[in-house]
Image (cartoon, rainbow, N blue to C red; front, side):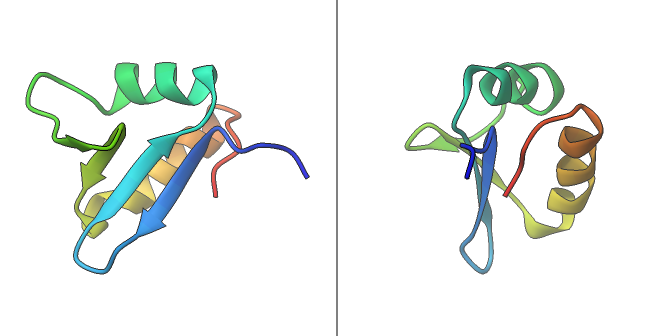
Length: 66
């Protein structure tokens, strides 16, 4: 089994989008993060309503997301 680029961690009222590879980190930095992005433990804090679009974008970019 290969290592994912981004892990989507469901914590109920929020998700943590955790970059695992350099490609995942770069993609999140360029496509998701901005100056107001909240992080926790190196992961981006995300409301559940946004995760599907982010998941689909990362998959379309060829990243392995789980």
